Figure (cartoon, rainbow, N blue to C red):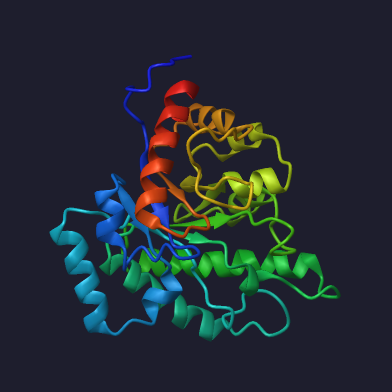
Length: 276
């Protein structure tokens, strides 16, 4: 494996909406720190006025920056599993959200949204599974009908946040059952580690991965110099093995986006070069 840290990184590196990162507000800071893109929170962007949204898009475009993907897909009030699912409400929200996504030029939407998909203990998991498939197909229909250059990336979210689709292997199975080209998945290093899934699980995501996220599992923070993050090199090796060519976004707790971003970017580029 190469040890030359000057080796070109094969992926775009970005910062996702989480904690205090606020990518839409901090786009200039994030770009100046050396990142390639931002991943704003979609549920937040949907709440912006048309003028605010247009100004944000104009500012990003004028700087030659990119919104590659968006996370925080659903607000908690839009339930997609359980006894209170409102299919009409889901469809209306998806139509509005994907229109916002397209206006910002994003090409992937990360579907984590643990509050929207978690179920009560007595609700049948089989029914929740069917509801998730139905919701993903609604998303696929909206993408196809509007000819959006967009894919939904269903995310595995660990046990501390949800009781549905906690493991990547489950998401792979769901996406294959949905069987629509508009529906892919998101691979998240933090959740893989929290669930103690083997990194080799990523090999089953070939041609399905549309977004990737990571954080230092220790306190879910930005990586920094001298960190020793077990399995991170293997994570990058698995992504390379499946031919993933998209973005890798840091989705983590942060206080100083600019300073912590610069340090994290340098760290990730070094680890990626060592891994590949």
